[in-house]
Image 1: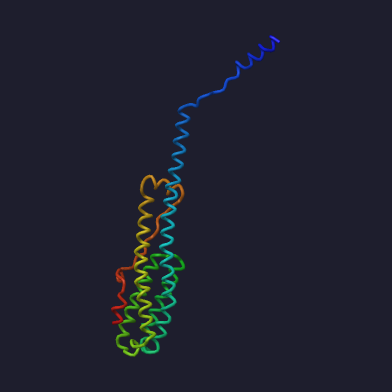
Image 2: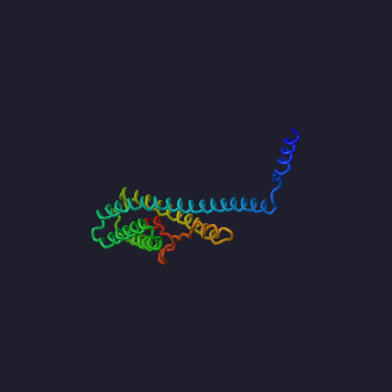
Length: 210
């Protein structure tokens, strides 16, 4: 019995468990955890900025499609009174198609150029319409005036919001430490929606109809 007790005692005296962790290891674990959490915060912020750009573009996209549907109605109405202005009407329709093609491709520089041509064509069309009193007296024409003017104003407002969202995203992904997460997770810049020089300012369609 004494021998067994001795063996039991010796076994227990040679079995040791660490009761403390290396302070350096603890520091590494804490620092690593904080780094991961901070990276998650930055990642979510970049995702939110990207989402805002996408939503802003969607708003423009909807308005462009609505105007795309309204323009043929305008041209058909004008044809009834402006039979000798075929070139002007065709220019509007070509520009309309240019906007639609650039929109489908997501080509913002081409969209800006096509948008400029369309606004220029509309300006010329409405200027010519001044010489047709019967056209200007048409209820359908006046309805299209209100509709297209509203869409133009809405597009201008949404374009500003889109460009603001793009600028916020593009600045953030270049700032430290966000730039590190942006490179790691492939967050890139977006293009601004800009019109070419002749149409930097939006056409005042309401004024053209007066």
